Amino acid sequence: MGETTARKCLAKFCEGVIKQYEAEYLRSLTDEDLRKILYRNEHRGFPGMIGSIDCMHWEWKKCPNAWKGQYCGRNKNATLILEAVADEDLWIWHSFFGIPGSCNDLNVLYRSSVFNDVLQGRAPPVKFTVNGHEYNLAYYLTDGIYPNWATFVQGFTHPQTPKKKLFADRKAGARKNVERAFGVLQARFAIIRQPALAYDEDILADIIKTCIIIHNMIVQDERDTYKNADVIRRYYEKDVASKNPRRRHQASTSATVNDDEPFQFQTGRPININNYLEKRDALRDRRTHQSLKDDLIEHIWQKFGDNNP
Image 1 (spheres, rainbow, N blue to C red):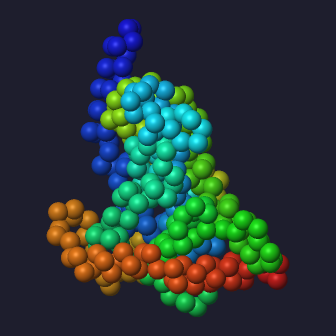
Image 2 (image 1 turned 90 degrees about the horizontal axis):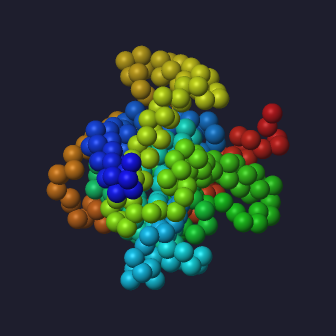
Image 3 (image 1 turned 180 degrees about the vertical axis):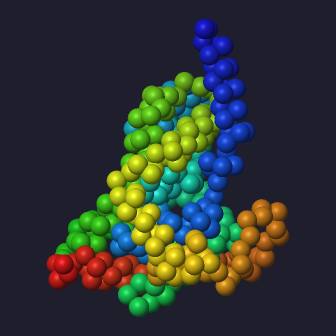
């Protein structure tokens, strides 16, 4: 097969996969998805945590010379950035691709759509309790470059106390979910492990999207065979039944989806600008960030510290 024909076939294949499977395998979190993620993460010591977020660079070998300057980062090679959020099963439920490699993770965040559902009122409202204090915004585990917002929790570079050291170790283990997802994604698909050879940025975006869709297909097919999958499922179903037999999807954990506040996923609903600004301020509240981090440190020490069996 000729090179041009092969590239056209690849483009058609990506187009077909996206058209057929994007709605299912690149969907936003549903009510049921969110409940299971909250349940699993609470048992790992992080109530209210819905995933870890990070960025991956994909080298763009065929980047046009006229654009190369804006796509080159510190390594002097043109790259495109993929931002993703992954859970413990390595399911990638948020992806944002196409930002020039000269940007860092923080610049990507400001352009990303990761908080759109929350800001526009389409995300299920979440409430959870940590160390006796109640919070109403789910959060992500991140590295140190991300800002001190209420929706981000970072670790410590040089923890000085046993409590902070334990927290840093537990947080590092949980945050590796997204790094593992990137590694598995590249291991499965040589096309994104090697430098990109396409000239069109839209084609590269379709390739990334197709790879993530197929990756999520594999995760869905294999997640029941993962280590401790049966144990987690049994405890989840047991807690569901013990809490309320009529609510089969409500787990008895301190982190829950608030059923008293209805939510909708319709994208065409008009946005109330005042509510939007209030939610934006709440997302970026530094005082809530510090309070949450302190409570998580104490919570993890009480749950996994040396004074506990």
